[in-house]
Length: 286
Ligand SMILES: Nc1ncnc2c1ncn2[C@@H]1O[C@H](COP(=O)(O)OP(=O)(O)OP(=O)(O)O)[C@@H](O)[C@H]1O
Image (tube, rainbow, N blue to C red; front, side):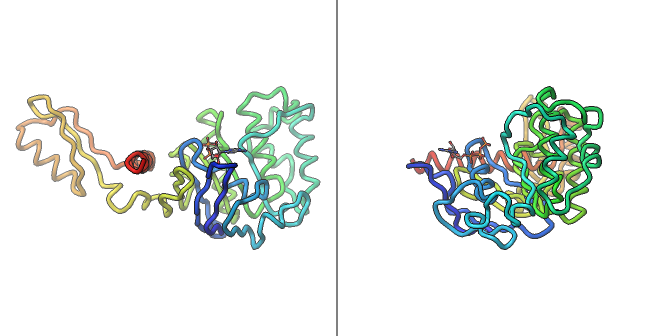
């Protein structure tokens, strides 16, 4: 639960009057452009940063007071930060076994290694892994403690497309087991695939929150039909009845419309519209 959260760094307000709630067992994605305040928010929820104002409760605890390292509260969280320290001298297996000791009910180390697809690298020093492989270790470290709530700050940056798909499968498994997940990502297809609900932060403010299909409002996902007229002019129409429109245009032209496309806007399209609208509002106000 986040209510009226505010965070300033000196004179800069990074997060401004943010309120949202994440329900137990849901996957929630926080979206927003670079510098929007996503990591600041997530790090406040993890107990790593102090807030300037507002109320925050995570698994029934205020992270500002319950967030000490080694606390029982912290052992219920899984954390994948945006930037983790370099791997160092331990192997993947050693690092995970070491981390597992901090938790009362850890997952099996070999099981986690397999879940993140690092079986062939289990005995390799983390410092020798590629960027994407190291990121998989980060994810493994985040889930080794069987967390009730998992924070994933841009977890798949550096993953190849296949690894990203495998990661989605892993997150779905965790969600099916009842894990609550808070995710930030710049991959809108990732949010669309994984999240039950998303929140969009722009300039430290929440501009929209809701189920993936409802972000941007009721009209945002209305299909878009585009085609080229005989004089070469490109036409674009939004309509709930695209088949009728295409039939009508084809009949009027007397042939197949040129360069015809019919598409339902994706979460990425809707998100980009939200960012553009917020930028226009900011420019108009200044
Ligand atoms: N330690 C800090 N000191 C001063 N300003 C900071 C600090 N950390 C973040 N900021 C500022 O706060 C704002 C929000 O940053 P934050 O890292 O939360 O954004 P983000 O949404 O996670 O961005 P990205 O998508 O690039 O990771 C930015 O303007 C950033 O410059």
